[in-house]
Image 1 (cartoon, rainbow, N blue to C red):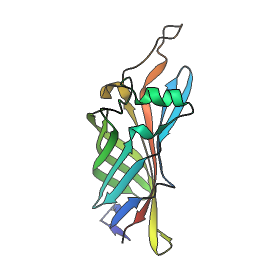
Image 2: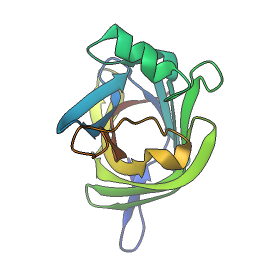
Image 3: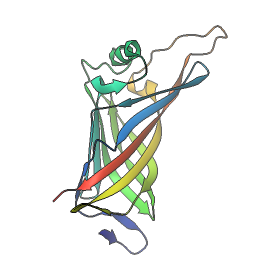
Image 4: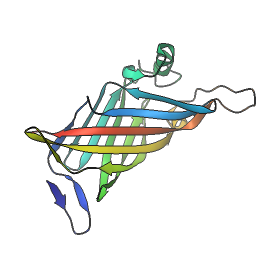
Length: 177
């Protein structure tokens, strides 16, 4: 059931919890002329009272090379030992049909910054004795604003790793009883 205002729908009423099997939180960054991708396996999210909150455990970062996973967990990148969790908390959610804009704060490596995520949100769909909604969000952040400064210079003098990182979240949320 959605709550409707004069011109805009807002997020579905009730409390919705993450279905981790069908959800993912990932990132993409330009690296040495290509695109480097990864995701986090241990994630959580909750939508309740018009607010979205989420987290990802840094130790669960997954890429296609275990050595790179260890490097991403090091102080050069996420510093998993001192900052084991990435967090997001919304302050405002605007919905216009299936389009959604979520404003809030994201915490990476102990640094919190405002962020705006854009994407889509579905209508509640029956699933067994409950309901599920799908939410797809993305944003771009400058990693250096969070103290993630590692880089190396390529032979042409350009940096190997871009500053801008695209963050993506594909969330399936189950209505809680």
